[in-house]
Image (cartoon, rainbow, N blue to C red; front, side, top):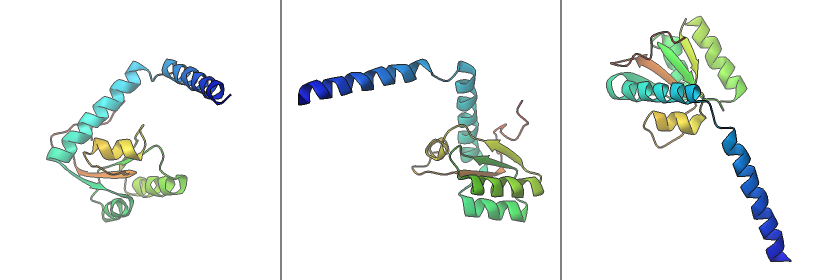
Length: 131
């Protein structure tokens, strides 16, 4: 009975993963994510950015920030606080489509990061208005 049960469970898991693969993100969305990742990588190499919530807020308050990226799974209260301070400082806000793990990885770090504040864009065109 145990083998039959695990077999049925395995079949259920396989069918659910097949269902998920059909709902892959559109090509345009994936291209936007990849272009944002490459821009972010260039900022980390040639420009200046602050990773983290507390130091990001400090950068917004002092007026050094040019742009703020917020991860998709950032807590709502924290997200609204960052958006509010960015609005007061007249700083562009970008809602990053990936979660905090993806955002940290895009910055070339081995840790999660839910808020990235860009101070100097460097050679990247990340600060140019996106459509």
